[in-house]
Length: 536
Image (cartoon, rainbow, N blue to C red; front, side, top):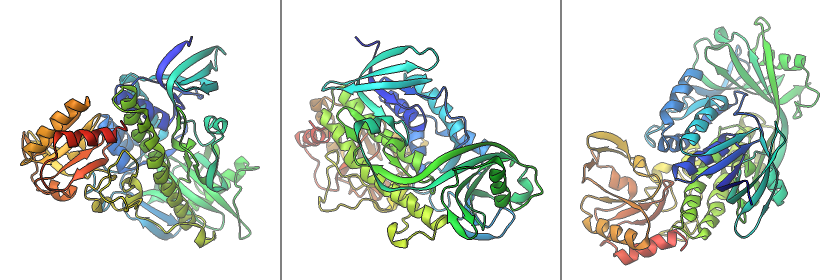
């Protein structure tokens, strides 16, 4: 018999593993996350948190605390730009202001926060929602059968082993995922193109900032190519170096043979001065790569985060993509484990998340080439896509979506243009509920949600009966009635429905099905839709 029995075992307790545990707890599912390291992240690796990820954090009640912590740590709404050095001339501005031109599409804003601050917040909330977390614990072995996964865990301090039996296992164990390797799942893509380093240093760089609001500072000079992030109060930061220039020739292996003196030379060259005392606190060695796993699922084991996709940090998409994996997976696991959906629902994870991840990996690689390595062949990377398309414009195609046009296979678009089409993220519209301003996104959560106009009494009655017959929970809202108002009259146009239409939204906030107009469907028709979406 197992020492521990748990519905879901999560291997990895970093940003994605903690998010998976947190989101499963949000759906009422107990999870055990095991992490090799003895605690959450210690290096202040910067994380650019996208609007979509902030929406997910809003859903589980931690958006505001993350924003407060980010404000304490980094200058917000800064520019992403390239310079010769911090004292040298500006070369190019990629994004003048991190949130400029995007605040209309979401109730949330992009922000920066290091993983060393973010992960404890995720850990605390995950535990509040019932997750069990074991740090300093490694998985020695695992086996799966038709009914679940059996794993052997070892406490790194005591050396004692424990047997865990879980119905499903999620591997969020990073870019070198031992689980993925043991399953024999290959990575496909560009491979490793730089053996990079991140230098964590202390120095008084405030005078060099000259009051400029800069969020990510790319450096391109005869010594190095990489980027800065500087923390408040501008006494510390890190410098990531991807390429060193040696007599005019780019060297992509910056890691091998690195000395502290060489690291110091990199920081000085990036700052553009030798007059400021610098202390090197740490150096992290890492491979810059762009790959995606050929499979995201094998039996009762699913992979997420860096275990499923590896990308360079350019664009800040990596951690966000992993959190979105977890968000997609959590509600599906929850409904299957509760017996409300057929296990086949889990087969929609890979066809939804793998294409979205592959697109994001390619776009991160494009940004690496454009911003860091323009000497790489131009025909080996995709054209640059709009950041919004990447962050929240990916489109899902699977049996968990009922398309209006099966021939429409577009994989991404600007979220302003999706208009509530099935397979896309449900649009944000500001509403008022009992006088309080809320977003349409605040109506979604742990169940499917039906949205209709005030005139659509028939839709709501059919939906209530269909949910009862289908033995599933369904939240039903009439916008313009029952205390829920639409002051700007934007809801129907944003969702592409007429007064007699309705839209069905999944627990992850993606549109599953839509009736643009016409008479309300019968309860039997809606029951059939729900059954199909749950793979019954």
